[in-house]
Length: 80
Image (cartoon, rainbow, N blue to C red; front, side):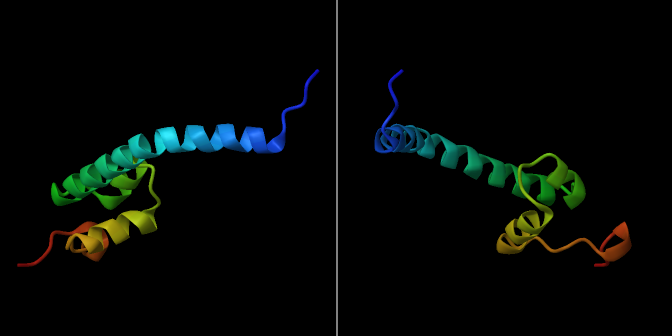
């Protein structure tokens, strides 16, 4: 049984990583766009987190970075 050289294995995994990196980044950007759209549509951040691969903290950061105001405490409607 031949043993694989660790550097050969690293070359293979690095090649696979680079081949999928662009596709992964595109999918990540799509998810971010959909998170923003869901929040702007009034979906609850808790629900957005449940449907995304991101943590609650990251969803809050995405919201802040895109000018989406946090919901008022208690889930009531915002006052004008």
